Figure 1 (tube, rainbow, N blue to C red):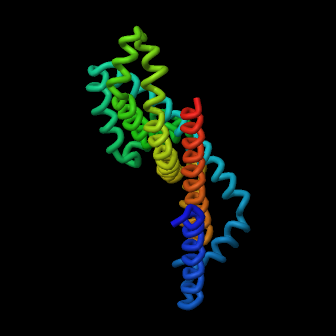
Figure 2: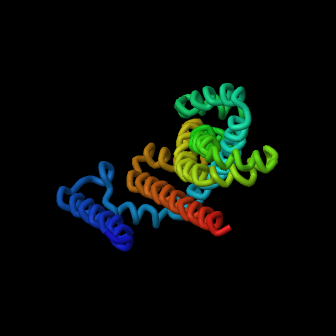
Figure 3: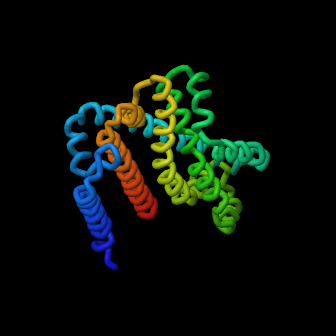
Length: 254
């Protein structure tokens, strides 16, 4: 299968699925409060696009801030783990514990402790998103070819020179792969945190709009917010994929 077909097939499949969805709703006369049709969802978005777009911007702001924080935190911890076995032994178990702890269980505590809505949402999303960057970067730093390390050592390179000129460039593909995963996880973390904050009355983001629409039985509007979240996730994943491609191409050309 050529690249053109690979790019076209998801679009064709999506259009076919939407057409089948619309036809099924018409055929079986499904009420909008059970399953709205794609047309009803588009109409709901058009009638409330200002509010939904503002909520999307709020969610994306939290997501981007959490992604940047996750990248910085993950790289810093990975460097510490690579520099010292003692640091690895101290950091790795706690990183795993944070990763497997459901953020929905600790989000209310974080919101209370931080006491600043936006920062609390960023902290929750960062907890969800930082682990792929940490684990991938640590794996990349550990996977530096041994013969190249010996070559740098024989030529009198310092640890800083070895890190900057060899280990970090070698770990770049691993870091970028982790960053791409963290981008979507940051969005998930932001949404989960907004659900918790929204149930407490803090109006921000698409998650709150989904809660609001559900309480009011505005199901087409709720689906419109869900579609926006799905599209945002696709855009984030694609943008980070393009960023990874450009960074690796620049590294290879250097």
